[in-house]
Length: 172
Image (cartoon, rainbow, N blue to C red; front, side, top):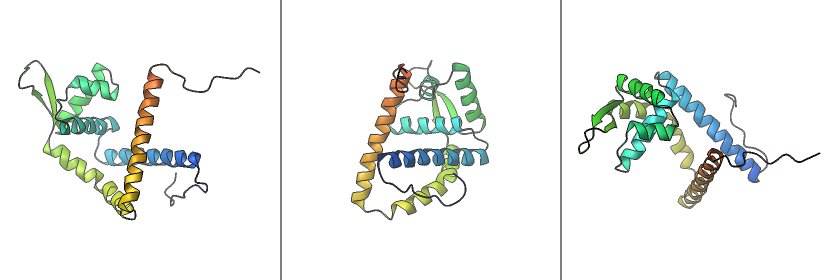
């Protein structure tokens, strides 16, 4: 994609929809890279904050091990990530209240402020785009996107289990 106006593919079949989902993913990734870069944050930093926020909202404790597992990082890479987030003032390390051996990670108010500032333009533009749809249409799209996320998770799990990544080659 370029900075030109986005053009919807001419057909509306399933393949066209898959291409639109790919385009959305690409543009969302580009936005994260741009917004993060303007704030000297890596994509992994932003993904880590998203993991911490999601788990915290569910009332779950977030440990370095949770980040390592969710982000598929090595232990040294996880430590470097947490060090960066701690140094930038986005995360604090705290001992767990009942198990003092366990370190938990908490987002700071600065992380919430910086994240809000970084993602406000995206939120504003998406909100404007969604305002053109009825509640029923948004319900349908929500159902669809939920199914697409679940399908993507299933495909990732299949790929990580060594399942078929592509169709088997046909003999000549």
